[in-house]
Length: 278
Ligand code: HPA
Figure 1 (cartoon, rainbow, N blue to C red):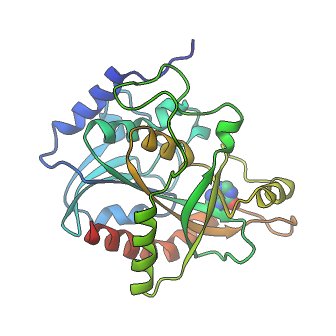
Figure 2 (figure 1 turned 90 degrees about the vertical axis):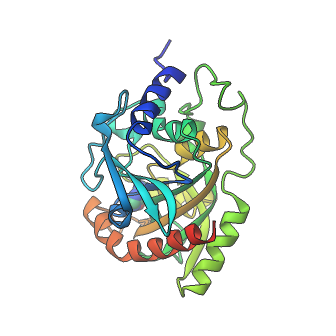
């Protein structure tokens, strides 16, 4: 049998964090590619590199810092992942979702997940922000579900409901905050692929046909794990590039990072607004 993450491993990672903090975070925030700067505004911050946490995978991607930043944002206790770990880096599904498991063992009830994504919806432009209203678990459909292996009964049920991966109230809150702050908020379905290669034009036409509005290489496994443990989830995609459905343009990691500079202030407004309202 494959090596799956055990409750003991999760708890030893959670313990290493707990020892260093005096607050109980209310919200976990995962920052996507190019969006890491948000963690720099956390106040009274305790920074814990992933390499200091037992059993933790370490982010290997440029643009992903690789540490927890725990402190306050808008006066609310938060635990921010400055840099996430992706499946394409070679870790297991259990390893890449370990941070969310750790949040659950620390008693964090809510998760804000952000990512950089390619815009598949024809109206989406680079720099747009999309509220994720649902997700396409394409990794799971090909056998890569992070819940495979022995179920962790202490955290959730064997067959968790996935009818509302993204919390309806949080979606409404994000819509209201966007409106109040003059941020144009797109909405749609995020399709999660493993990467690291970007999609071919035929992949993208397929994704559009099955209802995807944005595509990326993360988020879906994290949200499945979050919902398994009954966390409430808000998801935001920064549209970093227009998907190349006809093969006329090229997608690069540099443009993803560059677009993050336009997207970060918008995502920051939304995240701060949501935190204020909680
Ligand atoms: N495809 C997949 N992942 C991405 C993209 C994309 O076009 N842009 C940013 N992350």
